[in-house]
Image (cartoon, rainbow, N blue to C red; front, side, top):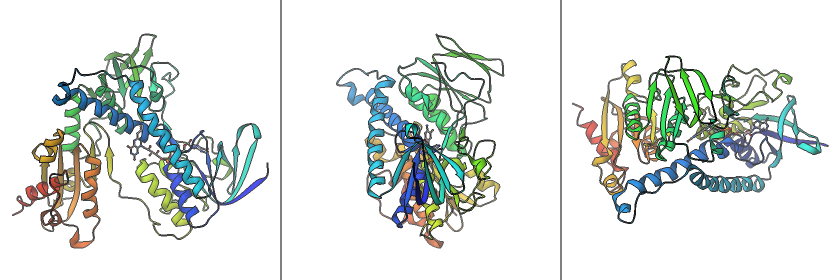
Length: 464
Ligand SMILES: Cc1cc2nc3c(=O)[nH]c(=O)nc-3n(C[C@H](O)[C@H](O)[C@H](O)COP(=O)(O)OP(=O)(O)OC[C@H]3O[C@@H](n4cnc5c(N)ncnc54)[C@H](O)[C@@H]3O)c2cc1C
């Protein structure tokens, strides 16, 4: 096989790899991407963000259908199986793959399917199967190989009733009961999805509370609503052993409790995909979770080798991975947007949805910032009353003297959209970042955006 020369070779076609490749190609560089799986899109498209969000959307529609009194006039509630709902998600994946494949063609980016491996700091060998390895030589190389679910060795993930967040997408029936071990974002999202399908879910959290990085009030609301929807949450528990039989899975906890379920989903941590990259050939080391350290220009300790996305750890979000990938190419070629991505909103697609940006009350209290709180409960807004999506709250934290916005925390329908209005104002410089924007601006009515005006008035009335 001949050697092929490029300006940039990108390993991985998830959001980080795609945006690095596109940005480099748009500035006129010769770019190739290497993808270990059979289609572009990364685990974002095939195993993570897209399937879980499509599943969740379908489940929310089922919940509305089964609980909205208007639909009861035309018939009884219906039962939907997991495979049926998954089928809907797969259609979205196909559309995403088609669109993304076209982006590469349109931008004249060559795609090599196969696992990429460093031979030296400028050379990647791609195992392209029967034709033998392809050799790609480039000035710059980007590692955007993502992450995979952590799978402890003492759990038999080959057992048909034991799943991780990748293999759950091959579940071909609807279990009656499920234990989800790990109550991070992925565990909480899947707890919402399965309980929305009528599965009795036990959510086992090794930590003390759910999603402790969120504002306390939001975490409390999530716990309340998950329980209200039927999820049994156990905090501060770790597993001792997992026994699996043909009929189910029994989890023994270190506290002496044991519980049984038809299916077991382990979602406790992820590791960077670095094991087979041949990093030893270029002198790059990884941490205990397989992640790479990068500088604020996304360079590894080898100057021409960059890394972005889940493989570098925090925040491990598709949203940030896109921006990191773009920033990588911007740093390489002095383009606009060459900055380190440090302010990232959280978007958590539980039922109810959660989103936030900025500081929490606990952080502001610890920093002794004199802040005030403005709240708007969705149940009081006309739009939520019309849509029937009355669960939720928007909370604005602001400096009580300068009125500067310090944090936006939201839960309820469309929370991850709503937060961006607050984010836009928070990004303004100087006095433009102020609660006053919401007091002096006319909002469409009825909208969920109007919650900003309600929350701002509520908070402003506390300032004396
Ligand atoms: C269940 C779940 C739900 C999620 N929900 C959200 C969400 O709602 N919002 C959000 O922002 N984020 C979400 N995430 C996180 C998001 O999916 C990741 O942050 C994102 O996919 C990271 O993008 P990436 O480009 O770093 O890697 P990935 O998307 O993982 O892509 C990496 C690609 O590299 C390929 N690869 C690996 N090794 C090699 C190699 N040696 N050679 C060539 N190719 C290789 C892989 O096959 C893969 O295609 C979720 C994750 C999961 C698991």
